[in-house]
Image (tube, rainbow, N blue to C red; front, top):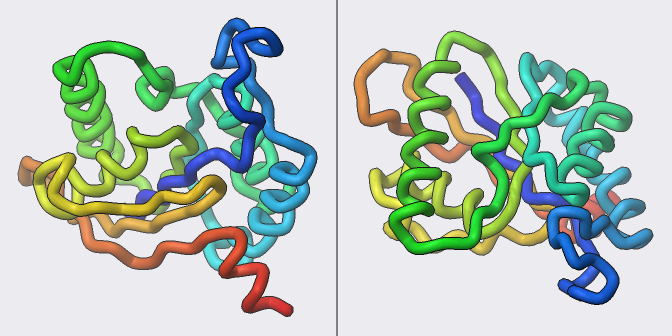
Length: 176
């Protein structure tokens, strides 16, 4: 199975006056335009996605919808495990372990795409690549995508290999 991890596009800065509930913070107009172009490019790189799941936070959900609209990927469904949770490190470890188990359960699919947030995306990638959420330092830029090839065998722990990583700015510069 290939797992494509996508960090949401550029969103407004945290502002408790404008968005008392941070989960409702949206993409900026520039972030939306940039990710629309990037999503079209992702659709050319990865034409077939079996499952698209996203955090329900507005900025991630909008990013997932743009992948559906611009890349032709399936309609997104919500995966709460991808949402940010404030709390102690133990909670973060439990969240990552839950996501790892979900990856294991989905290994029969061809390609799965998950849209979420930092630091969850980079920690999950590190866990799948190296066996520890802090083993690999990954600069997961806003709107970036990373493809991992998950070992299809049923062995645990789940392991993956890096296929590619793209950022909107690098990809758009290369297209000019």
